[in-house]
Image 1 (tube, chains in turn red, cyan):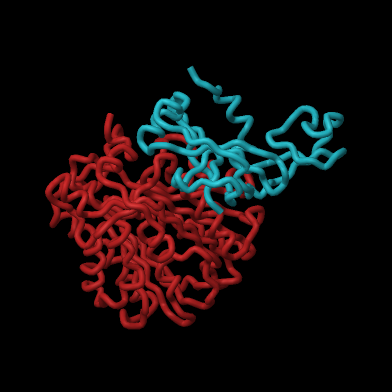
Image 2 (tube, helix red, strand yellow):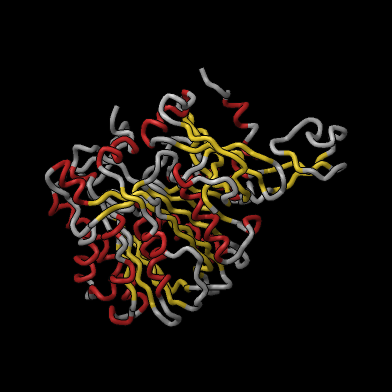
Length: 338
Length: 137
């Protein structure tokens, strides 16, 4: 049975800060290719953003929340370290209390991890309807250059076996052991990074290219058979590096390169970028998706576009709707002044 | 000391997260939040639960500035500046009070269309209290 994406929704918080404001405050801006980034408001978090995109994704089908049979939530920036997260969104959106929910939180790969967990549900139950909501706004110390690229965004997908926009053709994963790049020690809510750049880049390239090439081999595909390639965007340069290793071109990345205007969206990076590729994809196009999470692992998913129904709120519209703040306001909103 | 205890806040989740209203079976008016006896006909306590659209129009509003915010909202005012609080007349009839988000305080007007969405209201005892705010529709 064919399964895939039946609807999706995105949300980008409207606040933006420009790289020039960082340069003024710190003398430099450590996020390659990022011109500005999105910032959540004081009264928002990944659960309020997750509720918003879950609702938008259901409206795009349209599908009533009472029809949902599986719910998965993903973020690296949960407001609680212990407490169910999916329940907040489930109750707000009106998804039945009786569905299996799951929270995926420990790396930026969590977004695709949640999608694959939800796909397993719809593959196993032909009339199943799964909602996957991914929202993130990663946090690090303002003293660390690791903080510079961190943005905010959210995307949700309705996965099922009918009314498809994009059919899942196959997937592959790769997990391995790395450490020292992007981690949170047990008792800290901020990202640490030992900033060994070549080592971290090696981990990213190794895991993503192994997942990506395994999927190409499994499907017996050549890189040029894809019109869109979506790769994890810790900044706006990394996806190009990974793409080149897999013999993909910059042109194939173009429809999904959201990080130059939004920054690093963490677990929501690939989901928002996939929504951006879907916004402009034509029926018959193929989309390769490759996520990455430190520590380290990668998921690759291949989609074929089969429908031209699109949601009302496109990634481009959400990106263009913005209000600039300066660095002092940014510090206040982030709660960085104590 | 919490302004609203956790169990008391929890009991209001149908209103704060889902806009559940109560339609009087005698006079048909919608009560929000729930009342023991219908606020409108004052002669029935028989209600039917219904999900309100969350859509409505600003009936009147006030802007809360520095020093004017209740303690649980003081930090929000300091970080984000002045914020509007509105009484909104919902499509289904009831008038409801709530903060407005995503709105430049200078642009709020009586009659402007709004809808609800989930936001953080405030945090107390390390517990985040979520609930609806109004945003431009």
